[in-house]
Image (cartoon, rainbow, N blue to C red; front, side, top):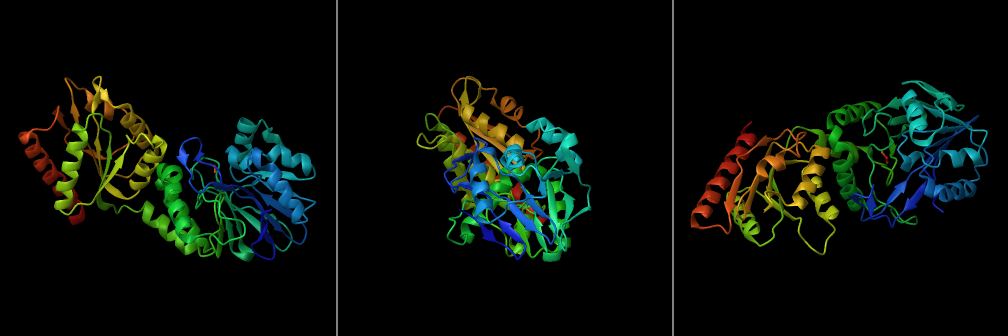
Length: 400
Ligand code: FEO
């Protein structure tokens, strides 16, 4: 049972999945996640926002029963990705009197993803208000946060914003406790990195819109509710800003320690020059690669530079670095600089093969530094020069 009163007219009664390890089979979720659903009760009508994923319908129905909700007038679909919409048909079977409500884009996507005819959706337009009697839910589309159909609803009378995926976190706090704020902030950052970062320009506009509404409470589609919205809005404003930390993110893969030797030496030199370096090993045999890749992506939210340290395998990059490159290309971190270093055995085409995987990453590419075999004294001097070059590039950013 997981029913929480948010205000006199609003209940939270979604589903919790604390054991989930990877969202979308990709994004590490060490604190699980929630599939939030809310009920708003006006004087005349009852609305439910987000029908949860299909596997969690039993939790939603149980919570509705616990809350004494035996009639629903409107089921509002904020976003048709299945983790929010999957149980729509099942919910309609239990509440056949309900009208399914969504934007034109939601209606289009419900047909695509759930085979619900678009004609069965009661359309709502931007800024239109669904009257519940003494209360109204106003439609605020937020396209590409992170799908074209994401929609917020604004309950002006209580200054409560239902924000869909925006401002979410993958964190299933225990039902009997308040959310741990440190975990909420940590998971909000990783969630932003893997869900919102590819669309940071659109997200910046949605954050400005949210500021203009000045909500007292934000109810996202995943994770705990924000009772002090300034916390998450300030975080998002820092994520979408142009300002980057003068810091190097250094993912490392090494087979015979030559590349690792280069990476450690360069990192030590950079640190000595006052440039912080975060090393992330992609070659830990006791760790799922998705965990390490997720940490790299999260680190790139506000880092100015990424230096990939990777050996050559059969003339191309080690596949672990290739997998990371596909991730970076998808999540489009706002890096200013990207670089490639590594050791090879007898021949390499790694530079072209690596960057061919990154067409969407617009960072300036620094010179590639490849070394044959184990670094020699001359190679260490090249690494000294390389550290100096990286420092000057990053310093020029802070001068800008
Ligand atoms: Fe939480 Fe885009 O689904």
